[in-house]
Image 1 (cartoon, rainbow, N blue to C red):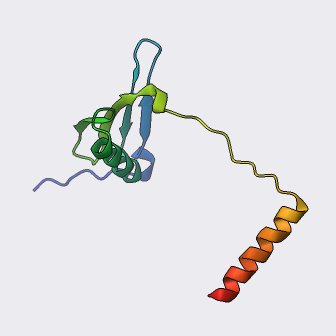
Image 2: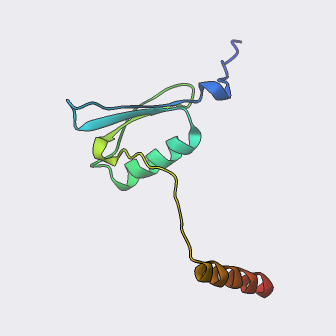
Length: 98
């Protein structure tokens, strides 16, 4: 009986590939949360998102338009003292309700 190789957490990677010569991006991922999310996108939008292969380690490769690849910086929220006070008051009232 052969033992199945188990990947370490460091081996659960996601690789995104795209270039100027193609309109599509390719994503290969071994991260279950990304596989689930991309599978859902394939079901909802089969004309845009396609699963092109799966492997024995639970990884999957997807192809979709590279315009859906996005890089974002951290969210920064600036609130005035009045907005901060009102938000704190709303939170306090919600906690009292429960």
